[in-house]
Length: 289
Ligand code: C2E
Ligand code: MG
Ligand code: MG
Ligand code: MG
Image (tube, rainbow, N blue to C red):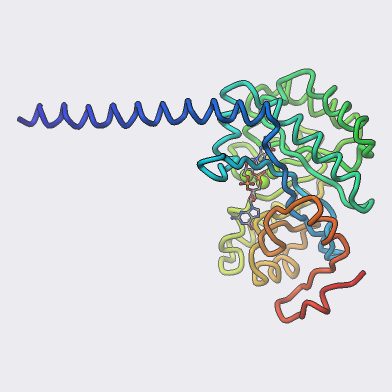
């Protein structure tokens, strides 16, 4: 009897697995079509410089609105695209779109694009970066490439080579999600980085936990000593901002406090906004041309 029951459960598990597998195959087919039809979109999340409290830069983030499922998270479709071998098509699409839009924003605003591990292993990525800059006419110092530690783990020799070559064009390199990998610190001096983006997981309790604050402060101090710029990701509250301004002093902050990612024209509209440092500043005081 117990054996029967076990068998039954296994069957159930099997069919659930089948269903999951089928769903994944369907999603992959839809993704392939969406990429070919250029149905993906790019949105931009503002990155604020603490010195000026204005937008200094934006992060380009890819969006996929599935016709029946609605928005699918990049955390789902980017790994799928990597598995399918079509990630470089997405990367080039985002690079093309982001550089063309950035060219239309006021001069000082730059844009950053996330590349995936596979992009860094492909030797022609550098040519593609060069091509999108030519095509858009964007100055190379207004483009930044974000690389995660997992990308670096992959094939360190080829990845470093690609990073060096991209940097040689004048494009800046940021290490994304810093502090979540295994050997974060070793990359800081091994790679020719320009910027470190400290992962948002450190932000959760930074206003309440002295140890978290000390950790972030040390990372920032170390990065600064190495000549790197620092962005802190995931800033959601004025309470967090206050602690950062007083005790950490990163160069830039990014997070829902300044909004989620928005359209390219939304960025243009926000480009002259001076953001408040505290909650009790009225909207009229916020705006300045
Ligand atoms: P990421 O590069 O670390 O991007 C930041 C993610 O954090 C974005 O999620 C953004 O919406 C979210 N975020 C920003 N501020 C806050 C905040 O204050 N609180 C919280 N909880 N979240 C915040 P998104 O757009 O869902 O992207 C997730 C990840 O997918 C990205 O992480 C990146 O790794 C990947 N991704 C997105 N677009 C692309 C792309 O075009 N190419 C590649 N290769 N990866 C991409
Ligand atoms: Mg990123
Ligand atoms: Mg990040
Ligand atoms: Mg991330």
